[in-house]
Amino acid sequence: MDSFQAVLIAQTIVNGILLGTMYGMAAIGLSLIFGTMRIVFIAQGSVLVFFAYLCFWLFKLAGIDPYLSIIIIIPGAMVLGAVLYYGLFKEAAALQDRISSLLIAVGLMFILENFMTVVWTPNPRSVVTSYGFASFTVLGIHLTLNRLLGLGIAILATIGVFLFLKKTVIGTAVRATSEDVEASTLMGINPNRVNAVAFAIGMALAAISGINVASTYSFDPVYGFDVAIKALFALTLGGIGTIYGALAGGIIIGLVEMLGAYFVGGGWTQAILFAFFLVALTFRPQGFFGRTGQKA
Image (cartoon, rainbow, N blue to C red; front, side, top):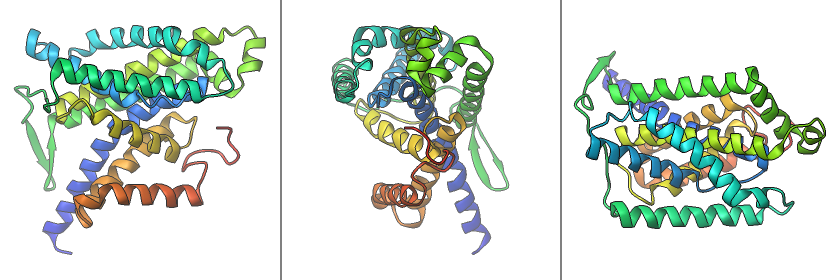
């Protein structure tokens, strides 16, 4: 292997890590929602794209920098999460049969996709800032400022969620509910309040991922379904119930996607990803970071 090929492979690995953090952030949101309610929120990807469009709109109409728009979008995202829970998922979450909640999530995904298509058209969009092309090279590896900012924000958000779950009273309630809803209810924990908080945080993480997508990649209304599937893969590979596992699972998905495209070709990326997912779960069904016999 010559030095040029080694640099290309290293560049591909770095790009895979940076892409994977987006999947990981979405997976952490899915982990919180699934952990407390056992709901597979397949609309997470479409919600992510919706926030990407909001970031795009704020930039185009008001000239607000994508990363400054975080202080506007995240509070709105958390309110939206609580509204979605109480308005759509509260009754479904109480049922033993999870088909209803899954169908609601699928319906919400299609509603969002059609809404975004009507409002913003199917044309791909992106946010191009004055510093969007700023970059530097380390050992031959090309790094852009946008992607590094996205990586930094994703890491900080993950640490923030981890500390919230470990150090706060409501975070402890969320963890208790994810372990055993009935026992936590008997201890005086309000499951609806916990579920609403989990949904709100999940939407906030989707908003952060959406802002990173808007400032780094191009996106369209149907881009969210692909993100949702890969976030589910990341959640499963990392191990359900682990925050760091969800992020690591996203990075693994990003690496498999980018390395598969480099070595085999872009046309085989999805097939390679699905094959890797199936083989990994065959030998490690609880995920790479999950506990053996962990309750799903």
